[in-house]
Image (cartoon, helix red, strand yellow):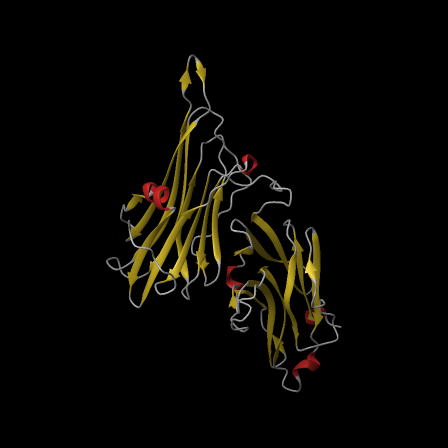
Length: 357
């Protein structure tokens, strides 16, 4: 059989959580084996979805489509209809007149009762790989799903599931994680483009745990975007910051709106009785709303302390958005998390905002 008619998607789970299968499909249907309905992709295991699509699938005209995908639960369903969250990756190729077109890579993040055909084509964003994020069952669980092409004689992908932040069963983090997080969650029906981001750390810090998005990448409906970095505070005094800014309304110079959230952290060692104490943090959270060239960073620490959250209302035709910023609290010393922000974007009618106090 011609290798060009062979397809495979290798799924690897390097997180500490198992993922139950929601749905699997190969089209057109063949004798190839699909995983059983009760399949689970366990930690440190992998599964390969592989199939063949010979020319006989496409009849006399040589025109048709072949595809294969797996969708897993990231948040299990409850008794409430439509509850839970699923994610998936699909490999697809069109044939026209017997000639294969370049294969496409599509992703899915959404409710189990959502439109099963609402896959997002991310082929152009595989440069050389593509990562999207989904929420997990716990309030602090986020998973990164990385997709990359594999070299070989046929179309092949590798999909790797990793925990951006998750706690192992014993309460210990599986391996070192970043100290600062911005986790953006899009619960609207709109798509937002990343304008820019920045991370600044002391020059002596070299981190291998940073998570950086790509400028121009998209925060699509149901998806999550993450900026995360590490920075040591062992050297007396120092300073670090990080931010992301997304287009809320990309228009002309006078009517463009950008939303940004920034974490600043400065620490200073204090000397008392000729002894140097541990560095004291001077942490700030700021927001940005306005034209991209403006200097509109506003501190919101007081609101976060008093209310536990902060709302931003972004009003532009034909949409209105409510952005909610919360600071996650950590109590375990082994977490080593200094600041974890969750930025949730909702359509205006989706949530009830409590009155100001």
